Image (cartoon, rainbow, N blue to C red; front, side, top):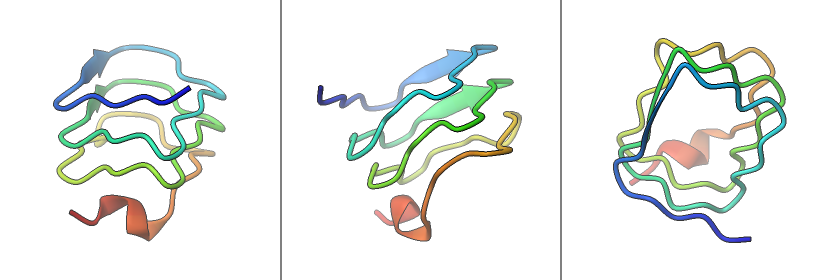
Length: 67
């Protein structure tokens, strides 16, 4: 399944083991979300803000953050 969403905001959610590989998610905002084993590898996350979320176990690569 392909997921694309510009400026998606999710608050206080549990995304444990969610898979967003290769998704197009520019401007994604995750506030106070739990992300253990969440897979964002290959996703496009330019401008994303995950600062208040629990990132322990998040699967992501530096290339995800390029515009």
